[in-house]
Length: 257
Image 1 (cartoon, helix red, strand yellow):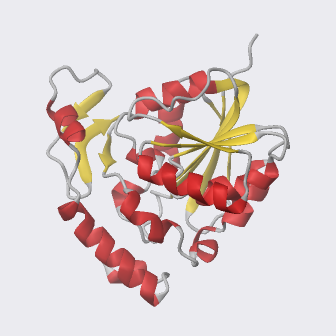
Image 2 (cartoon, one colour; image 1 turned 180 degrees about the vertical axis):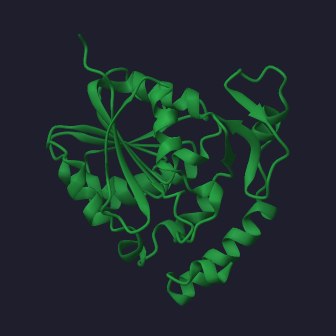
Image 3 (cartoon, helix red, strand yellow; image 1 turned 90 degrees about the vertical axis):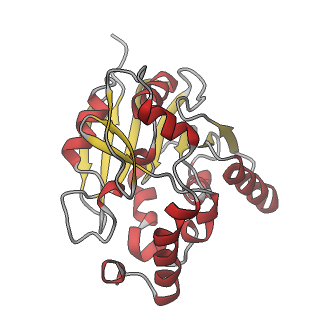
């Protein structure tokens, strides 16, 4: 395990190692996830299997869904080494946002990307969406403390992002989509929230690359991601290869004819 995490500075490496090893035992899959995995009324696009160590036993389009990182991971999400490991400043440059855009940060977590995007849309706003109220409380506290006025928190559910219909110009998901326990329903709600021509920017660790030091269920191949996005009507526009370990994939909601 530690061999896979050599790129992380020593203290963060120790923290993450303990987190990854201990978290599943302390915070097992939620009752909702266990129920969904065994529910005979499960929608046809899902199947079930015996859960793997890092998964919930629910399978979507051939992919087992992973456990969810909880509010207890804020320290990891806010680690100082993240710039070197994931190049978020380059991500911001490649978002190509307009100053009036409404962009949603889905699975916002601690708001790491939310607050990086905020100054890019001074006449727009950032919708920080998460299903953990604790994460949103953290974001709201930081926004108040730092005087950030264009960040709004949105409490979603495991099936619905609660985005305003047809009002969102772009959606950013960073290493979050693979954890959705209801990916089809979540993506349908995202598509509903997008304006025609709106974009989904999806970042996931490269599942094709065994050298990426992340557990397999927390990575996605480009082929798998494209198939899942196309299943809800999005069109793959491009994949940009400028990040050390992640795919930067851009999808678009078809424009109204």
